[in-house]
Length: 498
Image (cartoon, rainbow, N blue to C red; front, top):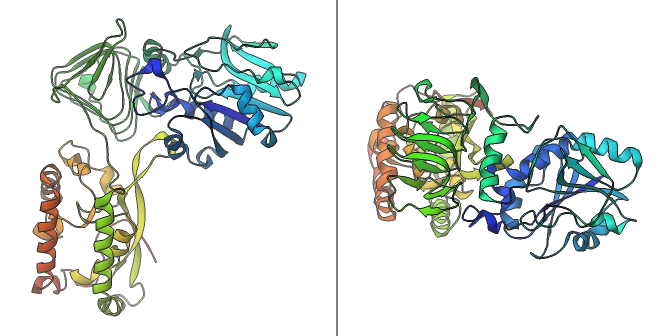
């Protein structure tokens, strides 16, 4: 059986949250809305789905991919903004079996799809799901009954499907249409409180009613209530106060003496010192009062601001760095045989090994944004100018830039927890950088992170050009060709032998 997942709602009632995205990609407790729908489909045993998208279809495809993350196969169908569900079914009828599922992917529901399908397929007739007496925008439709194709077109315009079908009421279910900012706010808090049953919520429970995501820090002194969800890579100061019913999505920083109660904070948001957020949604520098609907854009970045991550793999600067990498590769061609020979002499049995490093490309699988890990080779030669030649291939592939902070194994990067240590994430990862040029491999890690944080804050194209010139001059110095301490041993990294 195939499923049609409608994610074509622009979400005008959810502005300004949908300025640059669609309703289906808005996060609820750390995951986009549509991901909950796909998880429910996968649990029900449905492996093929057509994603019906309109605005931001490219970003939807980028976020969800081909569906392999959920063991599914996703295909995307682009439709006009005002195209009705029955028109869409006519367009894709040739790809559908006799029985197929129709559902909106921009609502939040208790995952009861498997139970609904079991009841509906027992009768072999079209049916509509109702959760606790409320429409859930789920239908079992058939090719032969066109009346069954009339799914709810837009939750912001209508609360029920236009055609009447046999209703299958699942009283233990809960559904939120998320047709307003207040409903979006409430859906986050209800999901964090477990009011959507077996919803798959990321993170682990660290205290009663408190859930914490990966690589996040929530001091015990900051916990002042229950029904608290903290997503991945969040930082909360020990003097902050997190009261009842608070949802922090991914990549959020809460600074000193801030107070949050009945608040939903969207990803990549900074809440400054002594800021009090109550009964509100915060998205970067937007403060949205749920009770009044007032939207305030805060211009003082010390109070509220955005912390959006950059992949550093697109644009003119990325193209220039790839061209520089190609030029360096051509110039260094005579050195490659020397590097191979030196590595074999240093370690005849294992002259090269595979190294896993965190690069510049972004991975958005499952709606979680992180830098991708890439694999490269490293020679056993102790000569600095030869050891890093294979990394030029990573520059050509866009995983590294010529200039940037040090490329780290994922295990080492995960250990960077302090805010000052993670300042390096504001800069691209590069082959050459402040640690390799100014400090050298023997410098303490803390000193390297300080230098990288400073570089990330003051970096500019002119500074990078100056650093590139310094790297070229360094090649003509004796230190670049003197074997490093330790002979032919590899640096201390988590690797696998080639």
